[in-house]
Length: 84
Image 1 (cartoon, rainbow, N blue to C red):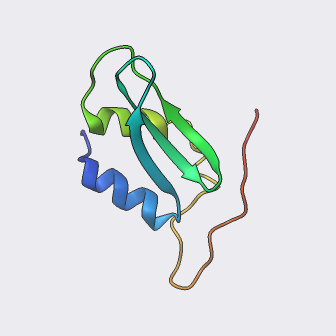
Image 2: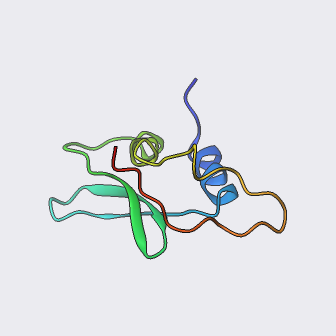
């Protein structure tokens, strides 16, 4: 099942993570997932892609076993990058 952009964004924000879309040097758009100030997921397409696919591609790099959905009042976890 393909997720909508809104559902992907809601999931990231529930984990305390940020996201953005911006222009690459090749004139295309790239998607990024942030644990400010670190980019923890990035997707740079070689061709025009739907925004949901791009954001999902950036989310693929995120360790969701660590960045879990936050409980009410819980603070975002410290920056973590699994290099395995």
